Structures are given as structure tokens and as C-alpha cells.
Length: 112
Image 1 (cartoon, rainbow, N blue to C red):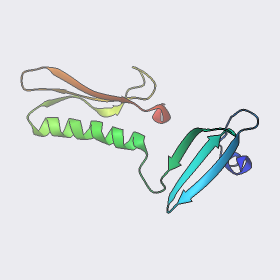
Image 2 (cartoon, rainbow, N blue to C red):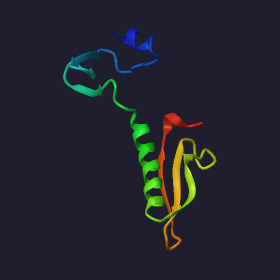
Image 3 (tube, helix red, strand yellow):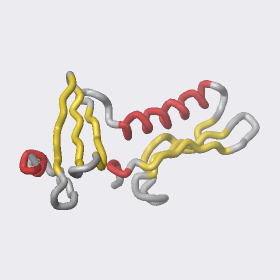
Image 4 (tube, rainbow, N blue to C red):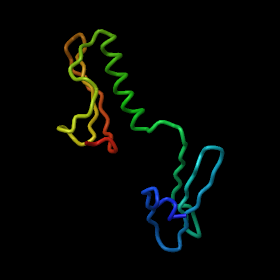
């Protein structure tokens, strides 16, 4: 089974004697690495669902839009700011009192 995942650029590393197994339930795919005595970890994949990084970036975008709608002023459109840190995705606003507010996340897979 490792060869199947390796062909897609995914490599699993685990101690000798451990096994990689796959379980399917509907569209959900679960991959488990286990020893003869216990499961070490399981990851579940849900095809067709959005990437979590896209969801978090959308939340930063929504924060910025909501702040403007509530009377705030933009002090930095939502976007990547690699000059701060690789994958740093943020938006800045100023509230009606002039306070600067930031929404930020770190998108490792979106780093430039």
C-alpha cells in the first residue's frame, strides 16, 4: 500500500513491524499506522471538503469585510504578508476609535 501513496507524493515513515492499513466508510478514507499491540495514529480524509487553510483564510477575509461593514476602516487588505513570515495571512482594520485590529493565520501550504 505504501507504493500507492508514494506515487502521489505521500510518504509514511514508521518502525519496522508496524503496518499501514486503510478503511473506507462512504466517502471517508481512514489510514491507520499500527503496531502489533496498538494503533499509533489515524488520519481521516473527506473528499470534496475544502482545505482547512482555505476555511481559515476565508474567516480572515470575512473579519475584514464585517469590520468595514460595521464602520471600521481598512488598514491592510486580507492577504499573504511574506515579509512578516512565510505563510502569514492577515487583514488589518481600525475601529471607529482608531484602534488597530488584526486577524491573522499562518498558512504553511500557502507560503510564498
